[in-house]
Image (cartoon, rainbow, N blue to C red; front, side, top):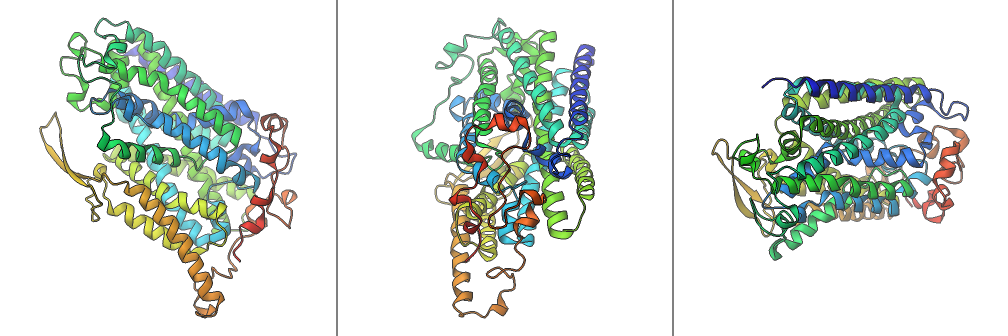
Length: 573
């Protein structure tokens, strides 16, 4: 198949636009925070907490509305055995952002934390913070690799260019503007990218609906025409399994919220951005593919259901329209990849390099470490996208580890008084064993714990005819693993606290130095700007570091310490 010159031109124009916006944002904010005494490294990580309502809402929405989000939503609506009833990511992500805004954004912000690992290192020490960094890093790298891989496959479908080339170029652009401008470049490019996603997909939908091969999606929603109805249904025996998936989606991504207002805006944005993907999935389910250039065999019978969105754009829309959709997919991928790479490098530079190994490191040194790790982590994600065939399975497992291990630990450090490093280690081990024990079909990892209700399943690969046998765990073992991790953390923390403080066990055996810790980092270590520190409390965020922030938050409680978020509630007794 020939390379589509128009498609190449469209991609080049779009990528140049994104690159220019990223460089402009870096130049515009190169001196941001200098006059207020803020560290340059913190400016790169969190934008001086002065991004503003409009840009902040866009960048938080764009972080979740990635290539996997729009492609995956369309895929689940299209699949005959699932449909809209099982396309739970849009609602789950929106719920997660609301949960994060209500319960996590305020204490994280009011205590002056910069990265997600800050509270862990303050309470559990630098060694446990380093251990918790592993699943967090895995999740960011595998997520970036998965969506870069999806981008390469999409470009190959629509413009017939080499997958490897498209992945490398896309990754290089995202890495470059993230490296140059940090969160400012990520935020401003996200505004452009989110606009491209919305415009590109909505332009494509009317043309796809008007194609003569597409039946009325209102009819096919409830009645089988070319395949089962795309609304889908949840059988009674699967109702609790569906509920479990909703809970997982609602809790998993809620760890990265910056502020309550932005979280609520992003929740609304996620729902709005899912609408065109749902419609495209419905269009795919309502199409007689024998009347299209795709061929008589539908995508689901070619194991190409995951490509239904680019396939609809390619075969049901005019070529000049499909390129707008292509720009939308490219924008979605880059808007998520840049955020993940910046998040991983920020956690490493601050929590591992600076707080764990070189507390005397200068701000300039930390900035250079961030830049190097942005390049390293971005290159690693790119290599995995090109070389690993099971990158989605790796991301799926690593995201589960974040949910099972990090989420309950975050609840403990923010809301449970008296937990310590022993409990954290116990929770880590319990959660890891129970989750890995359930197996992972994506990685062909067999279970060694067979939870109640498990069933043997088989999957037929239509292209090769191979039959794959796997075990489906119908018991909500992931949520049980998360709860077990939480209970283990609390139980072992209070047990060791009692044993050491009562004298039952001598303090010389406190080898983690956790009960009366000398390692636990104080507020002066976690918050580099000394002007922000009140020694009797953990550092509150100043009322404003710029004009934009003052207009962003109308609830003054968000920017002030209260009794629940005081330093005393965090320290072990």
